[in-house]
Length: 329
Image (cartoon, rainbow, N blue to C red; front, side):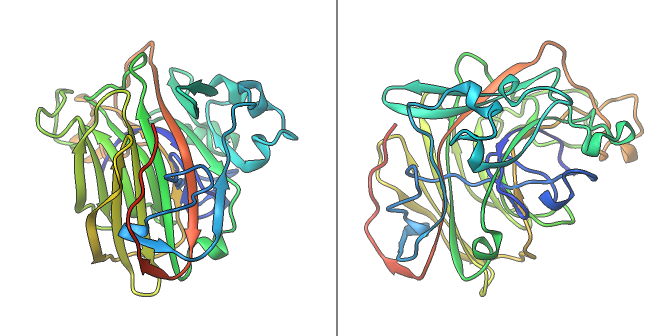
């Protein structure tokens, strides 16, 4: 089992937007899981659907505009807050302690932070405190009846924060669609994969810098080394009838390219999206107990890490061949 730190935006119910854990239906009483999706463009328009253009409409158009302010996360009536169903965060703290709006080079981004206080207490039940994770999830308001039927494309635009770097010794769940039992229809991860048998917390020299997009069986569909100050635009198309996945990727202003053609996927619906920071294994715990990622493991002190999300969206519709388009930032 993996252990993660989570920085995420999530989609409600079976989805997670920058990061999620469990079904959003159980946020108030159970171990939440989330899913989140991001888009190539604010509003998810001109999407590439794994190299094929969607002729359907937007299911999620998570707008980030220059006039939005960080304090809007704490104002339920603000245009920003109305797009969010739930924020998984540290107990009894304002959303703005973990979320921020920043404008850079003409692009408005949502900054998601992880600190020592990023410890989620499901339903306020102290006995279920997730001391193993450090997580911040943004769960957008979305019509899940449309998001998980037919053919839908989930979009995530992700950028590393060069000022508050992620710890490559840990595994990070940045986005996923998650089933109620904790499996992922697909996920986007970064850092070093958690292994219970490890007694020393070290960054994997080969894979820790890779952004990895994986299927239900955690098979890697595509991997690419992430560079600072470059935005990675990911589009994952799910055919819910045929249970297939297809992936497109654009880096910065590049044209989107199909990096994984349509492949069979053993998905089981009902998902969430999220970003999560997993602990390192605690050598003082028995190996067989280390897989309890939410509650076991070692986390450092004085954590200050963050990541940026920009274009977030979900589109639906039939697939038609279409040329990929360029994307900014």
